[in-house]
Length: 287
Image 1 (tube, one colour):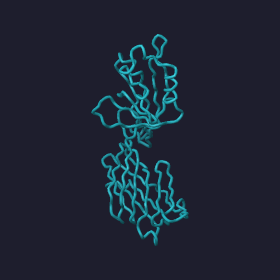
Image 2 (tube, rainbow, N blue to C red):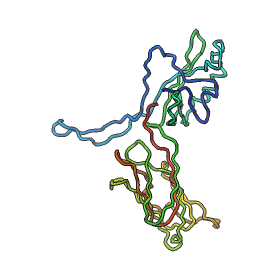
Image 3 (cartoon, rainbow, N blue to C red):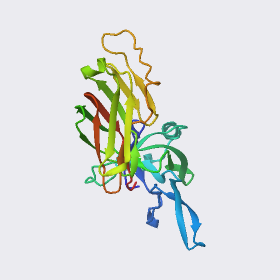
Image 4 (cartoon, one colour):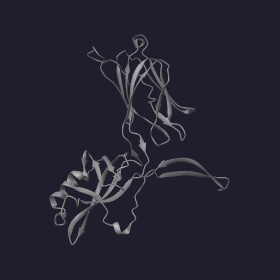
């Protein structure tokens, strides 16, 4: 990992006076998992002369091992031993039973783009003459890839007029973004059926048609894409909301698609509405 600092659960490594380092620097080679390892399932065909692909899936999450020590620009040589209190502070921060956002910052100042990961760490001590001078961190993540900065885009959909939305992920297939839909059309008072369709350019097999019945004007609908949850809030001027949205939804959750060549999606609605789409794009980069 080419970095000197990282952000984890809202705190920087440099906040503790530490930097990323390599206690095995003389060996000159560092190996890390780059993630996105795919397992291909195949069946024999024509007496084993060819094998047909039946399924492909990711089998591993990203892992990485690196060292940290006190920053020599801050601490003199006789102050670089890690004390018991410092060790406990770092363990409490890094060695967690749940995942938190981890974002490394490369030492190349020209590199302005940083992916982040959901991670936790196992920790080993690095001792010299029985004194602790470093920690070896083994990072475990919850995904075979990283994520980019959150994309948040707002669109005003006019009845049956296309809007162009880009899927900025590196992964082919589709993602389920979060959505907030505001029903603005007067037609909702007479016909509450909302249809929002998305399709990938020139790809008929990449599409969705999300249908929600019995919507009302000024109703706001929220969709949590990853969790596959839909909910509605109280409309302005109403004390209660009697919309049984769970029974009025066709459960074709909105998705943004991409193929190898195209990431341009056309979306349109059967009624005027405002939508906000947000997601973290999948990033396949070098950690």
